Structures are given as C-alpha cells and as structure tokens.
Image 1 (spheres, rainbow, N blue to C red):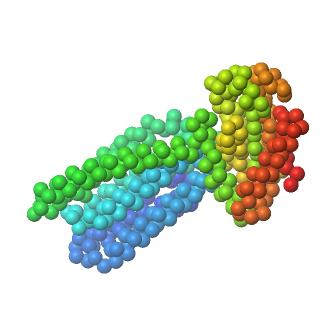
Image 2 (image 1 turned 30 degrees about the horizontal axis):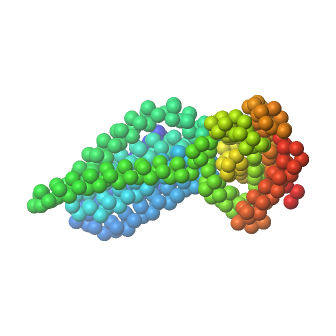
Length: 380
C-alpha cells in the first residue's frame, strides 16, 4: 500500500512540475517500502532506493529553479524557494546518516516526507504557479509577488507554522537514542537542536544578504552585479537560440546640475522616481532594469528586435518626461528628462555582452549630442 497518495489539491497547473511531483511521490513510496523491509531484516536495495529519491529531488529542484529564472519570477520568491530546496536535501541527508540511531527509521522518514510535501507542493509551489499565471497575463514580477504576499500570506504563514511544528516533533523523534546510552544521546539531541536552530538562522541571514547583494539600496532595482550576470545569461541564451536581444542605456540629463540646484536628498528622490517610471515602461516581466552606475540605468530586453527595442526606448523617454519633475538648471526642458541609447540584434557570440554595451553606450552618446531628451538606436 502506498504511503503517499496523489490528491487533486496537489496540482499546480504547471505540467512539468506536476509530472515531477508524481515521480517524487513514487520515489517516496519506494523508499518507505524499502525502509519497512529493512526494519524486517531485508535491507537489499535500500541505499540505491534512497539515492534514486535524492537524485530525483535534486533534478526537480534544478528544473523548478530554471523555470523561475526563465519566467522572470520575482527574486524574493526565487531566493525563498531555493532555500527550501537546499534545506530539504540537507535534512534528508542528516536523517539518512542518523538512521541507525532511530527507533523506527521508516516511520521517521514517512513523517518527514509527508510534512515536506505539504510545505513544498501545497505552499511554495502553488504560490509559484499563481505568480507564473500572473506573469503570463502581463503582470510585472514585483506586482505578482506582492499580490501573492497580500492575498495568500495568512494561509501560507499558517501552513509554515504547522509544518514547523511537525518538523520540531520529528526532530525530537529522529534524535531519540538507544536506551543503553540515554543520557549521552540526550545531550547529543540537545546540541543537534541548538545547531539546527543556529544553522536555520544563518541560512535565513544568508538569504537576506544575498537578496540585498543583488539589489540597489537607493533605487530598489537590480544592481550592477545582478545586471552583469543577467546580461551574460541573456547573451548566451540569445546566441544559442539565434534570437535578438535588446539593450538600453538610460542616463538622466544634467543630473549633476539637478543635485547642485535642488540638493542631494531631492536628487535621491529623483532617481527613485526615474527608476519606477522606467520599470513601469517595460512591457514584460522577463525584462530587467538595473542601476548601471550613478544616474545611469540599463535595461535588458530578451527576445526583442530593433523595432521592439525602439518602442521601449521611446516609452522610457516619455514616461520620465511625464513625471514632470521640475529641473531648475536643465538646458533641455523645465523638467527632468533622460537620454536613451539602444541596440538590438542577435549576439555574434555567447560572450558578446561587452560589445552590446559599447554599442548601446555609443548610441546614448549620440542621443546626448543631438539634444538629449530623446533616444537613438545603434547604427551597428
């Protein structure tokens, strides 16, 4: 009899993810049966069954993380989701190593895997599926994530608390020791729980640090390091699939004069407003806006040709002008404006990022030289 039975509530609507979940449940059932046979003295094939289950889980996690990147899911969700994947592999490995000290390894693994199914499928994966659906309808990744947090946060938190309590109970069960060495094993159990708590706190802190390391603190958009990574990935993908890649360089016109006239606090507020306007001008969740340096922004437009990139560049110029932020010392207009340089083509190699940047920057220079508050497409 199967320990895990598929329920319609497990369906996410993502066909590949659901198929992998089915395969995982089959692997969990196989491991449960192998552990029960081992309890009865038949350990044949137990290690192979365990390794097959772990390999399948790692494959599923890698596929989910690739799906999140390809769909342009909000970085905050990606980081939280990936952390849960790592946590599962670590917890299963720890239980496997300690199985000799467990009174009933089969029951312990069954309880743990059941709890994990509730957290992974009914919690974080359903959240991912809803966000992917929103992205498919044209919603921005940030908006889809924040909507998910507002609408589903209470239920998700309740689920996490429930699973957390189950994990705590399982942790106590899984660290039970043989009665002959009870006092020593109780000290080991206490130390194990303390280390697990400390590791959990460190992992949480690492996840937050990693998120902050990819985000510009002032503008709250991707920073230069994140941009460089995403551009390299986008170039490689566009080259491999022979698809065009669009790139925009955006510069706030006469920003130094703005700071000198209006003050640095107003300058910071200006950059934040410009970042929001540029983000809102992007048509798809897969597009990325990042702070390239100072008052300069960069935009990655995957699978976008010359016409599409020009349309987005025009929208960026118009969106910033529409803010009507007073600029008392601009030679261009009475309000804040931007100049944009654009390039769009199929990369000539997988590492063509520097070449594209140079072409977009040259186009930006021409936009400035011909009067600013405008965009120019690369002649290359």
